Length: 412
Image (cartoon, rainbow, N blue to C red):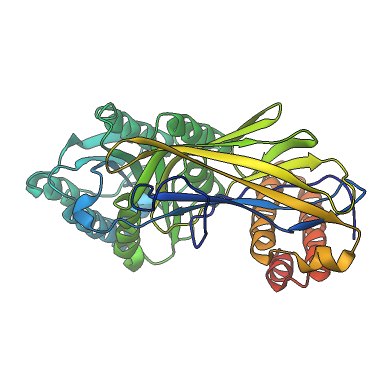
């Protein structure tokens, strides 16, 4: 078993967890716990491990209790959307509007070479005018994707000061961004800036011609969802799924703070944007959905301990705003591990789910890095990186007999 820096991966997971929290479930829609990939770590050396911070969010009991939404629908109407694609886009948009409540806010933006606000931000009310605007969509021109998202965010901002609303931009595009800022890095920066404002962007890629890296970067950096639809017939279902998430937001303005004791040094977040200052790490999420799982990872280094020692590994506090009553709340949980010279005790204490989460996120990071290497003309370096990560995970899966990790390594 290799020994080196201890990696703690804090995966914010929203399913099936028990928690340490100060109030009853009825008072807290969010529960919190801290898990470790191994409850027992090797003694006498600096070691690797994985720790998972789980958030379990309850589903809203009734639809009428949901918070209202402030939604901008941004639709690509460039020339490549002609024919069946634009027809399906219209149908899906109509279905989305029909599912909104009269007090929800909607704006509709269309873009090709230029960006046009078809419907400025307004309450849904009688949806007749909205349906007329959607039916008017026709395809032509190029793809000003950045401009479309920027205009959608501007419409959302018109009501962003009203704290009742869940703020979201939904982007539908089948093509590359070829007018205005167009690189994944530029769109990622746009997503990150919108996250700071409390606006998430969900991207829906249609067909096989879109830039997957660009669409994923925009959504993930803003804490939104990403969908890829090969057949336009699937669009209505995707819109329904996304709206289901938006209507099931249970917590907003989520801040996760992790405090590490002496001897545990946080190194960096894995797969998410967070900050580290001394012995404290912090991560911000825009919203949490009832029943949905998310992940956030952080690497830390832990100093050696004697056999038989037990110590606290991390303490986490989650602060958030309840989406239903707009009240602030916080919960805290902590976790300890023990140390042993018995290798079987270490292997037997493994949490396979935490290890699998680590494998998935490590590979996602490696693929993002590989894409950048390919874009810079370094294809051999990209292939070598993916092989290295796959080999590391293969060894991890073999040591702990973790079939999920081995499968991830094989798929790399």
